[in-house]
Length: 349
Ligand code: KG4
Ligand code: ZN
Image (tube, rainbow, N blue to C red):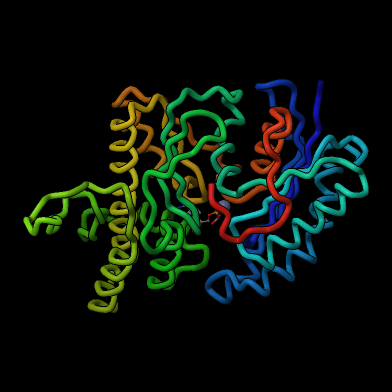
């Protein structure tokens, strides 16, 4: 039996609505995935302004929903359920999507499914794999708000193995871009500049790769690590100091060397985790997975280790509602606990 799901995403600065059609356990087709990006609105502030984001969501939510139905050639009566991002994200942004979803669900008397935004990013990988990724899997989540290494023993089953102690990886891209005077969002700008630069010009710090020496409970020095946790604040500061030293620095060299340091850390830790748990698959997810070099290096290293590698289609790597609808669909057909229907800006996996 075909099921039609409306997905709604408004956790940060993208207002998005999508219609997907699912059939059975393994076939999902995206009929529409409309994204209204606020990048141009926030660019002049150099980052997302929550109050401005929330107002823009209010302005665009009905427009993207109408467009999603038109593009998919579906009517509201065709819906089987509505899936919406409940968190993590900005409270004032999340509440706009949830209000729209609640109204639809009430009018149509159809189930409302709360979806974790990060789970959406992860499941963006499944769309072309027919839901058939082998477990255990290691997932690298690298977005503007999160950097985590997760172990998945099965669908919807997550264990956090590593987390960032400070900035998220996408946030580091954005901050370094600002230091270099590049536009927001910084990730794509750094990637563009890095293509023309020398990635070996600067050796920026790589947190937790080499084993660190700590004093143990008995007072003896002991080597620990490498660690699966991340820290990007030292890297960001190192870039800032280098730029301050030289006003006429070559931005391309800095961008390339910074990107290299990030890729080195993300790839080595992900592979290390995968080896430790005997992973059969590695997945990358979140906005930073739009970075082509990162994906290439992680794919090469996964293949070298004979582990299947998956990355989302480019159009599904950054925030979009299709990934939310996909999670909603699988939760719906598996009659998984549909979750509490309220926003949670700090929602955990
Ligand atoms: O997942 P996402 O779209 O939003 C959040 O959930 O946070 O991620 C946005 C982040 C931004 O920090 C952006 O700079 C980064 O993803 N990003 C990239 C690239 N494209 C987007 N970072 C590196 N390289 C890219 N090509
Ligand atoms: Zn995201």
